[in-house]
Length: 377
Image (cartoon, rainbow, N blue to C red; front, side):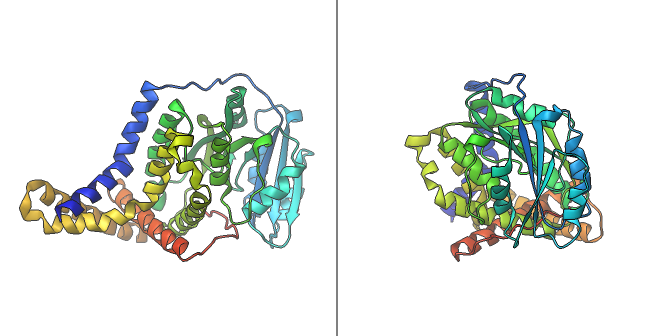
């Protein structure tokens, strides 16, 4: 039973603390600068929208007002067989830089991007969600990284405007991810990106199957082709967080399921002989993170069994019990329409690990997620 405890403990500790510490250490010891500079390529902003009549006008208005040369900015909105007024509202934008395409029948976000790219005139493609509100200089901050010829993909920083309820745990988790991305950029490429504010050289875009996750497939393909994927924290994206743990859970299941298929199809990236440190990053930051849930029950149960064997086992059991009680309290607090930092983060931790378990079971059963569902705030 002690073996079970220490193996489980080691997996959880490394997945959430150990890898982060290693990434920070590598970033300080083996700093690899990004050659940022004043760079103004032509840019196409691509947005897939499915029944976004309530938000599409605001996101288009946000994009046409960005601080970037007018003659170098194009905005393409792809309506994914919307059944509301999304198409009409988008076409009424009143700006000749805005192009509206319609995808029929509904095929999802990935297919919508594939449809838009051949019509894109920009040297750089920027992917924005229908509810994404960019900081005024977000495009400038993103594209300055492409001054470095080794950079193929850039992602910006997501800031949640509403951090009540489930959004509080999500916001705290994003702070952790932000720290990891800064560290990974310091020594090479990042593993995870923010799908609502991404940019890639058009020459590196690859057409994807409908069920593939573009903000996971494309960055990995860029690394596979020898380019860097970097984080630009000065490029700001503001979104409202998901307001309920149920919505967050469903979103996490969809993302993790599609990520598992991508990891399986691009498993060559785990070959340390070919991809070196990035292989370890990919395993640690993604694969192991999605698998860490499996170590939690045996860790808790073995700690309960070993309480009499020493203070550390007893303390571990008490810590696990406290986490479960706080998570339960977080659920109650959310049902009451309130939020609290002390209980929201443990609850969020349980939610995302339950979602990871659900996604893995679905993957092992051969299930795929094809049709894109809007991220509702």
